[in-house]
Length: 224
Image 1 (tube, rainbow, N blue to C red):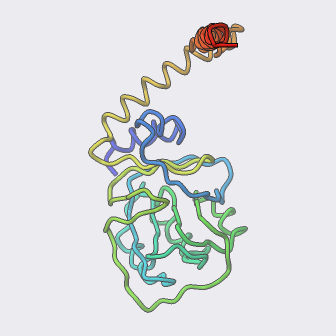
Image 2: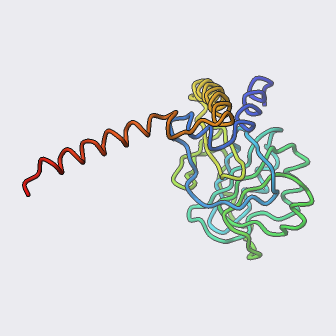
Image 3: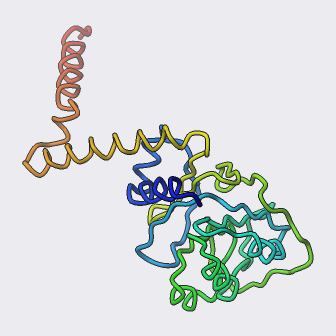
């Protein structure tokens, strides 16, 4: 991963999934519940996409031979299912190869060992059901995860809130919008700490009072 991209990914990881999602115009959310195997981790990195055959992790083994430092391994199957595509041995390889994280649209097993390894992993399920190794699958092809397309090189941001995907082409704009949003949130936080209410800052009190005025006016005008 280039130094510039590495810096961008660090900024997006620090900003967090919710902020990046809002800054991207509420686009890119991976809309499934994910389990964060290593608590307290937050990561962003370009996707190394692994399209496994159904219930088969041959492609994950293949991916280890091309994985680059700083990449997020995205593992998917044609139909998401609670099959353990990775455990501690494959995740050990990913860590040694320098992966930033792993996003698994299937199951992970050996959870205690994986936590000890410390490589950030997000998964749809935890199950011990094993996968076959009979079909090579595909590498570096688009997949869909939680209704969200993920293409090779798209930046995946992960934290306790889940995952959001930033298309490679839209990265500069989303980064600028993320920085702007963080600045606005910092100013807002100062006002809230000073005792102001979001009810007033966002003009919600005025909106409510205006609606109540019109509601009362309509009530008075309505035939009795």
